[in-house]
Picture 1 (cartoon, rainbow, N blue to C red):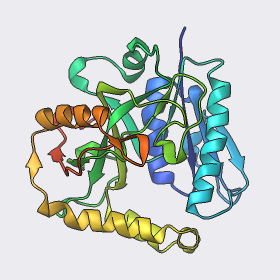
Picture 2: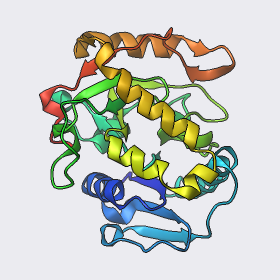
Picture 3: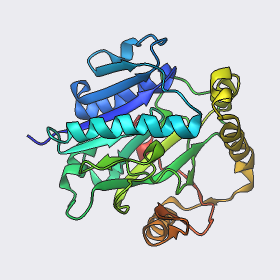
Length: 278
């Protein structure tokens, strides 16, 4: 039977790791999840029980250097896993790859049905889930998309999340070093890094993250939240189609295999049918 694995690397983020293991564990089986803990000073939480866990020494360097080192570790593991698995999903713990429930198939069924000839990766359309001023704090006991419905369609999170061949990921899974994007219809990647200002605040107060160069990136996330009310809502069905077409055709001028979208900021509301997925 063809199988799919999922892997991630995490440091001190039990909230999203719990959601990540629950979601991908139900779809793929926890025995097919591979979790790297960045730093031996962490305690492995109970949500990782049944998964394949590796605790490694803290990856050193600033954010640019350490991100490359981390993804090199995960790319090497993915190459090994592809000897046994048909595909390997790679995401951060606050990212969830999902198929539109309207088509009536599960994520693994959908991925294994794709024609991957000529492709070393598959991508979902990037959906950056943003905190809205009317939103309550995130409740771990409730599905995430039942609590957050405002999304920016984002080129940054249209990532090469699924490897079909043993190639090298770029930092943060944003691209592969060899190959182009294949953005699948009905497939989405939801990112929750901007879903709650308290999460951003906790990271801004983390001296280790600040020393590694995260300050600028976290300020950018905060500004994104503040700018959200100024952006008008667009229709989900219309603009997910437009965004996928734009990102499939247009590339960043300085990095040919990273998608662009003519700087259009498209805010959409996630349809109700997605709200119980994770």
